[in-house]
Length: 74
Image (cartoon, rainbow, N blue to C red; front, side):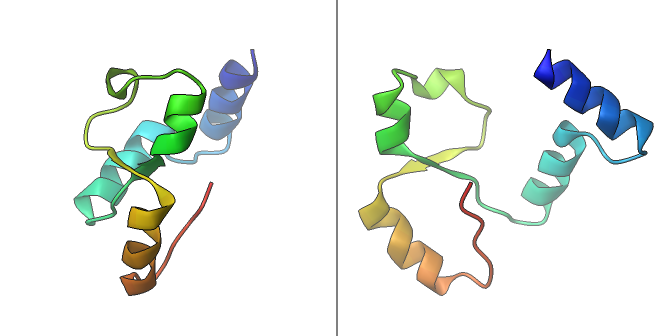
């Protein structure tokens, strides 16, 4: 229900869809990195996620994050 309401709110306000925003981000060279520990903790597998997603633990992510201009941790 929450997903449906969010999608409708996005549409009603003329905002690009999540799919469109993701596509534009990937096209612009944004790297999407999932926390491997969280993936494991919740019992997900790599096939449960979108294509193009990278998986890394904190020890791998932090040095990469230091080199980046912008980081979003969600």
